[in-house]
Image (cartoon, rainbow, N blue to C red; front, top):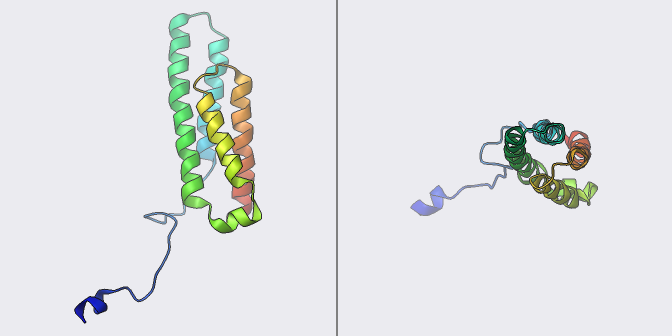
Length: 130
């Protein structure tokens, strides 16, 4: 009887441990802009040490892009969003793959592809934000 009194009377659901509601694809975009800027700086330099620093920074920023995208995907978007945007999973998959590929690429065109993919996700995000 004591255990029964401790059992919750109703089940509630939250999208994260602390439902703060603070989500914004701009975080991923800012880091992706850094990725592209590092790619451009790499291309514009003949200094080997400078290029090595650009690559190091770019790799760190590309990891941050992935982390910001994962938070949006796993914490913000819900099953009902997939109903209205069935390609959402593939969009996130492609964007995170592009962020990972940025670690290997020093081509600013690749960085622009990453930015474009984040912009597609951002468009859906703002459509779903209530």
